[in-house]
Length: 303
Image (tube, rainbow, N blue to C red):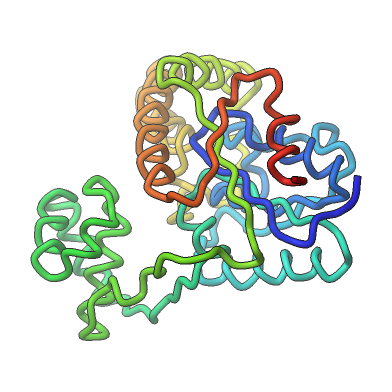
């Protein structure tokens, strides 16, 4: 099938089958995949992020997988530059770029005019300490007073984003919402495809996936990464599954508890992802359980 001259973005919550669909579409549309999962940026974080194996990638080139060490902090601003460069390179070679992932801010950084102000370590540290002391709800209340538009766009449970918004407001003297993307057509003529399932199905799939991850050696993967500095990584050490295993390695060593906590927090994360993506009216939604999913999406993209 002929390549498309625009970007395809496959988005939605965890455990909907986005990666498999992205590969299938890339095979059919002469495409290449661009990763938009923040934790799949990390080398060695394979089992716990459900990263496709080389065999599962079916020979399709994948961009922005395995580009960071676990000690490095992921930056959306840096990702934006690298992902846009990858998309533009794929288009320039006459192939179809397929952006795929459930990290909403990373997807938005590619398809929307999202700008990233500078940072001030001292100011950020102040708000991070407050986050620990009073919790995200109180900081979100403060953000709502300073910048109601930003507060509406940022979930009250997302402590890191709230801290970032307060930091930007303090160091720029401008509302954080001034940096948020304005509604409009997505970059690269992107067609946004959303995959979803009923919440009960997603919960079951998450539980099954977590069981499979622990059975496939997640604990050994975390041990190996701990040896190369995982605990020092501000972003990687907080990844779902990795944080819970680290806590048990440093504590009672009860991996059944780590698995149960990972599943519980992942189910919660799925709900936040759904809330994030459902706010974007440009996304065309598909039932990920439909056997005709790939065919239906292909029809959307080629007609």
